[in-house]
Image (cartoon, rainbow, N blue to C red; front, top):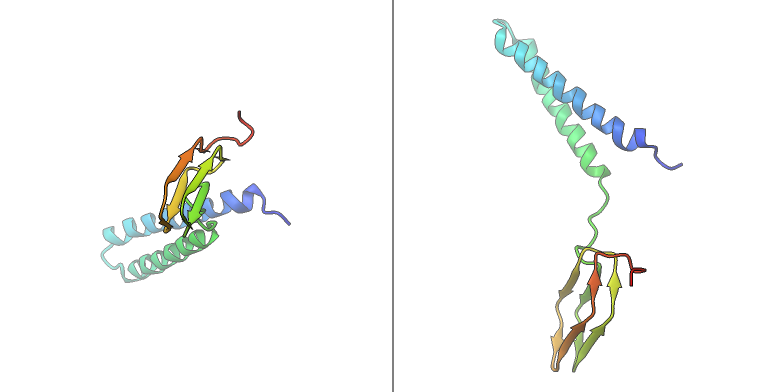
Length: 117
């Protein structure tokens, strides 16, 4: 079953807001109280809970996509030519490679709809 907007966005946001607000209130009470041992223990507990919520939110993030829509890794050749390539990605990435001749790129477009002329 596909996650709904409530489970993907609203629930994690609400959890973060509740823990943060609760922590702020307890810190306010603890700093204004003469006998605040239990309040400071609550601050420690809410801080740990905040840490747990942060880890939970981080684990829900999708894996980072490569920066480039066009990716070339370890290309080797006497002459490499790439022409008229379109990608919806955000850029081009070239890592590694050994070239003994010309390296030519012409008409490469990234970050656009491939159907756009």
